[in-house]
Length: 177
Image 1 (cartoon, rainbow, N blue to C red):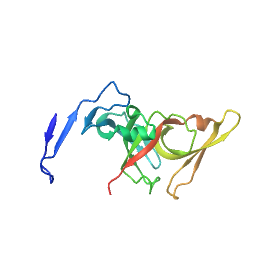
Image 2: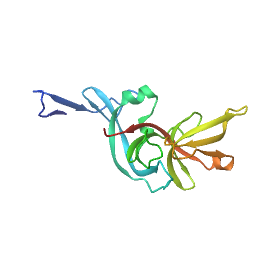
Image 3: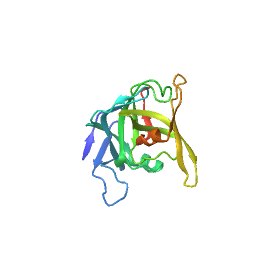
Image 4: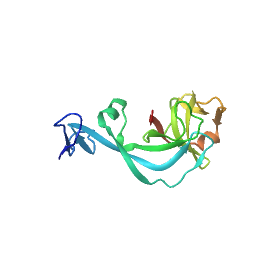
């Protein structure tokens, strides 16, 4: 399919074609010879504050991103979603109402990072910092840390740590400037 669109550059044509499904890492379509993958945006808001109830997620729409971007970061685009992040506890890194891209393949906190997770029926986005100890190199505690100094860190130890359900790791945020 070739689309001609008016632009500043006369004669500009956009070529959209089906991906080569025999190649690993192909996307949903090719534009101008580059593969793009569709990441679904879910009807779900996670809290960067005191927690939100988890509504039933619904597919709303999505965002096309180059498959090369995912490949450079070792992310499978088929296992990613985009959600709205609400609240001010992760400001300035993730301001209120920003969209976050979550890699749902990451279900365990082996290293510090920003994660989407559920705890006590609420959905959150926070920085999680594991305390690794013991012969199996597994976390013995995890500390929930907000980027805003207004919010105190919250340690999770023992059964509280086991109540943590990791949705995925936040790998990117989409912001208006």
